[in-house]
Image (cartoon, rainbow, N blue to C red; front, top):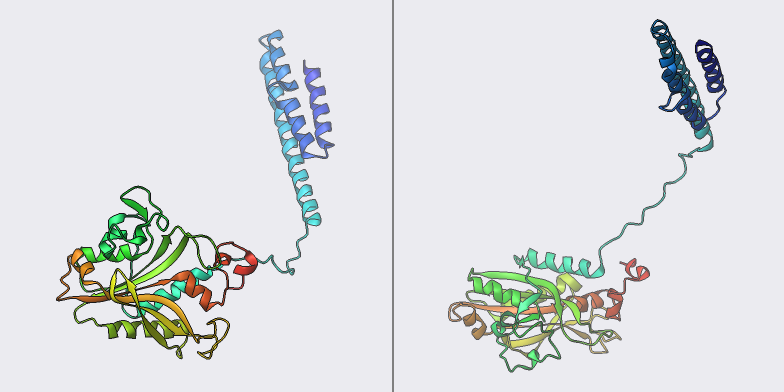
Length: 339
């Protein structure tokens, strides 16, 4: 047994010393010191020795185990350093080379214009208010003076979920909800996504965005409305911009008007963008209808107000001279990178 142990030690040390890879070294560790290794097999043979020989043989086995472990660690350290040196030589990094450029995204043109519009009105003391896109028929129509038989309630224009719930066709329901709370005065804009059963073409989409504004206070007049929208147009399209009001009809307001601005492309002289007229229509507006105030619990004899609504996509198309609304949603990176 002692002779076998000595031979095992010399054989193992020789193989470990001449090992050239870490994988082979690990195989040798398992082969000699593992649970099924040769040294373990010798220990199992101790049962054949006498009681006097067992302690001495056990001590010799422990000495061999310790010698092999020391040699294994020594060779492992040497091979690890050699592998690291080889890696450093073969995987050279030139720190003077330029780094890879990260392609960072940016805001969508709609978001750029929306933020600009919000900043303009916040600067005039307005609050930005949000509301639900899935809305009750009452807030979307009735509270805005649109009765049951109004053409706007035709299913060809509105997405109905059931008889009482619709996808909002405008952001005016947010105004109705704010008025209903009765906290006066009110100065707010309500930007958001709206839905209408329209065909998809260069100027229409079943899903688009609106920005609607509302002011309710004492002694509010149409002159306040004109001054507000004139200031808005100048801030958005340039200080030389002028506005023109044309009579119109909206159920929510009375009197009502549509607003044109001087063409910022030609300055009002006439061009392709304004179709030679010198003016471009941008929004609708008017004084809040007394019936709407009454339905919201506001006394029209004491309080008056005005409201306006503008399509976000419309002013984005105008501001950046884009001729097709669909470009805003096709996610063509070549188009979006221009902004």
